[in-house]
Amino acid sequence: MVLFGLSIAPGIAISLFIIFKDSYNKEPRRHLLICFVLGVFSTLLALGIEMLGMRILSASMAESLLSTALEAFLVVAFVEEWSKYLMVKQYAFRKPEFDEPFDGIVYSVMVSMGFATLENILYVMQHGMGTAILRMFLSVPAHACFGIVMGYYLGKARFTEGREKTYIRLGLLLATLFHGFYDFFLFLQDKAFVPEPISDLLLFGGAIVSYIIAIRFSRQAIRDHLETSRRLHT
Image (cartoon, rainbow, N blue to C red; front, top):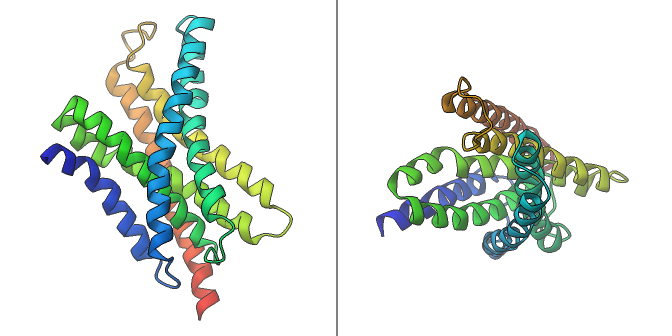
């Protein structure tokens, strides 16, 4: 029960944080809950596609820097961000309650936290307390950042006439890039072809740098859309 509690706590805490930030025009609770649940389902969708992608990748090329990049950016990052995007786009994007740009961040983060919570449960129950603590401060907040990046551009897409597709593609692309760089450095830790002088600590540092950049982008994205909300409601 302790491990389960630690598994779900980060996703719930971040969800509540974003809901609290939405101070000008809060979203209906039912939409928030449904988005969280859809995020859980998006994990299962992504997992099925990833398993197929990994099988194709391992059968078609030897382990290398290129195969690791394809694994990180295409098989994992793109598939996971696309599955989360699909849930937001199909459920929340056209709803009348999606009535300001910040709502893109709210709904995207709710889906992302549903995704991250189920993923976290699977990892923590398999690997234990150390993984629970590490993922509480890294992986789950990272998913929130990726959701904020995508949601920022979904908010722009919803309210910028004539540029919907451009902003949607840009949001999906940037979320994938942030996610891909984060995973790429972590995946290199397990690869036999990486030279010994390149320590696990250095590779972990690369993941942390990409994570910090994503956090800074996310903070600015929240400020920008909250300023828009303030102008709309004052």
